[in-house]
Image (cartoon, each protein chain N blue to C red):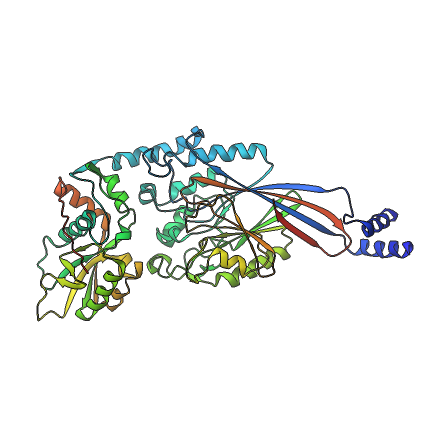
Length: 234
Length: 293
């Protein structure tokens, strides 16, 4: 018997010697808290970028009288954000059709705190490089906007209100067939599932960053305007 | 020849053929969703004051490299977007620093499209490591031939296969940012690529995933990926910013274990998985076992 085994073995050995592999995985985690040292070579690479950025970001461009709040259905930050864009986009435009602003609570990434407002603070509010667009919608799209706002619990609006679930547009009359919504390219393209923008008739691209418009408005206002009215009721 | 026979005979009575084992240790380090967090979070941060920062991460990794012979450093995507460093420098500093830290490979997250394909290409010119994207077909874009589906790291006598799987871009990333990128079914592609890597002799197959850990809906996640594929041993995930104290273990489509790990966001945590591979010569067909300690 043993002989037979040896023969088999030699044969197998000549053909191929495969391997039995055993793998043991040992997971762990390193939490990078304040106790770890920093590295001077990395710091020296970052420094010129940091300094140049700080010069730009630390510039004070306005003052906030309160701690702004982003919330649903109403928030001082919601109103400030939407109003700032509305004024920025319409102050030298003659409006013939109703125009409103519509943004998303999720897109306002931070709020202004009481005190000085820097360029960096505006970057925190709007870190994304989204551009402003004017979207022309038929009045038949109003229903789907109303149900969207009802479902989410409210979003930032300007020059319009949701009153008991019904959208009221300033400048709306019996002749109105369509209206304009000033929003971001992100939302127009279906971001946050604002599918009603698919009903768009026309788009005017401003090629202007939303953030740039916010910076202009902080500078123009100086002391930020506070409006705590509720623009959304169900 | 005779000795072979003796060893073979030995196998009749015990499990081991050779008593002598060759052990190789490979240390996998990983991050995800670092989101342009170059500096530590500010000291007034509500949840994580002073945590993270590339400089500290460099020191930690340097110390591990001094102790371990074989280190593989990986990132599961969303390198871009989150601080003004990205807005101003369009991702170039992130790529430069990751190269300094010695990253070996990364996959692309949805936010890595935020500078557009051209923007990603420009920034990635500063990356001295490959981007692994197996289920994005970039052949009709500026990123054609700029990414690879997978790569194999030879460590000692062993091979570690790594590939990248990305999330569906439609509805998440503006179409103008991903242009003609074609999104391929992540489950199908992962199965194909993992099989190739095992065939190529990889002892361990790692998937860098930006699918997200889990969802309430039937959306494809790392959990779904683990359950519906075979030949993947470890999924290093991202996208959902999930802080995991330790990885979870699931069974794959063949009932074999898959480890899933994710380390939150911002580079606040560094994930580590030490892989110990020991192999013995066998006269029979190739076998393998993977266990988590």
